[in-house]
Amino acid sequence: MALTLYGAILSPFVRKVRILLAEHQIPYEHTFIPPRGQPDWYYDISPLGRIPAMVDGDVKLADSAVIAQYLQDSRGGPSLYGTTPEDAARVRWIEKYADYELAPHCTFAVFFTRIVACSVGEQADESRAQTALIKHLPPLFDYLEGELGDRKYFLGEQFSIADIAVVCQLINMAHGGELIDEQRWPGLSSLLSRVTARESVSALLPAEHQLVARLSGRI
Ligand SMILES: N[C@@H](CCC(=O)N[C@@H](CS)C(=O)NCC(=O)O)C(=O)O
Image 1 (cartoon, rainbow, N blue to C red):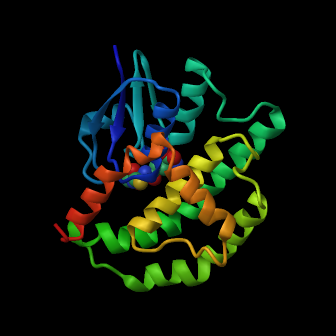
Image 2: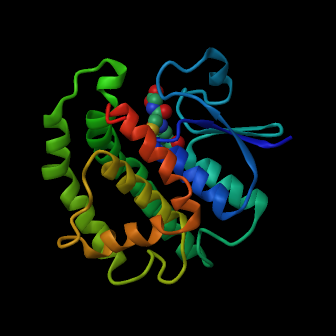
């Protein structure tokens, strides 16, 4: 039975898993589940109702980091966690940083306010996006810029889940109309360009851009 991924394509966490699946060349089926108003049966797979979730035979998993680790462990292939325990720990730290520190601002403040709020009948509170952009995100980006230095990826030459997790948040921020400032954070800005040029990412973006345009009322 094919592996099934559940979720909506504009979620950074769903995107993270889709990129991994493409990097590992794992075939899968994708079932749409919205981030709000999930059907009752979905809670059997994702007890908190969040997206993404995944079913692989008898295995049911929720949370993008858990799914990512499972895919690496069960399918093997090129490691997206580096080659040493030190690398793996660094990668997991940066992944966690992206998922729990960047996400509230890049995705739930900027992207949600600008793109999703109106389409789900909520008041778009632009001050929330502004606070994220002016107050919360700069120190978080400063830290990541320092961690990246002038390296190609967070692990140097080796692409990892850390790069995917950070870039997934930057993509949502860009969908919300805010590209990372390349003068202030040149390393992160190049990382965004480098990672979005990979086939595993670039192949996903046209459908995302079209959906963002539709949600924004531009088409
Ligand atoms: N740590 C989780 C976060 C997942 C998450 O927060 N997804 C959002 C959509 S981007 C969601 O499902 N929100 C609905 C909710 O919290 O009920 C992961 O990495 O999968």
